[in-house]
Image (cartoon, rainbow, N blue to C red; front, side, top):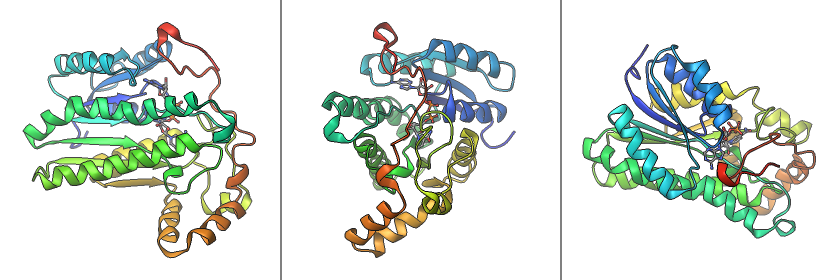
Length: 288
Ligand code: NAD
């Protein structure tokens, strides 16, 4: 148990993957955790696993891209937990394929879940955090917001937006003199199983930025570096920081050629993603 003991946290998309791995760590630290997720089945499994392991768990069926639902469940979370100290915007949605080959609705949906949903949730909790001058908002972006990935145009766009949003809101809060409210942007590289299964760069690319072995590597970075040390950026694998440095140093044309030499141009050719992925409101749920 540590400085996180007794903190009240919301984790979106917390019923599996990075979100669930984060919930495991937070519950063990003695946090009360509200989990928002689209999948009732996975919420039930998560609740069963986490119950009795430390802090309280409040599983809630929620489509984070549904503004009304987020509003209602935000009130519910404040009733259940008293207040919200930490908001972790982790839920995410991906579709692959070259932008011009996909229906434009695919792109809009990714912006709805990966970007607009963050506006809804942050708008619900930030005012209380500012009033207390205390709180932490963590947004899960991606490695593709450091090194763009062809075949993931809308997803890449959404994750650059997440990083930009985190950065500018941090400055807004600092400009308002509310230094007690923290922001963290988390940038996972591709994890070998789950949402990005099958995403692959070539051997040189993998040498520079090896795939992440499991979801807990990211959860550990989020909790230990993000929440406990207040790091503004959490990047895993750390070698992805090299992408930021090279972007600052090299002309775009050279950077683009290097990216293609590392195999990013064909990285989604064997993309599998997560099977049976739920990507809409449970009422109108459809499967991949
Ligand atoms: P995952 O598929 O394992 O879990 C995502 C969770 O979000 C699921 O439980 C799903 O039901 C939930 N979810 C999806 N849409 C939702 C919605 N509209 N409302 C509520 N819940 C919803 O994915 P993950 O790998 O744990 O990814 C978590 C975050 O990390 C995402 O934002 C993703 O974009 C990002 N990320 C993942 C990887 C990777 O390789 N897995 C890499 C970079 C970034």
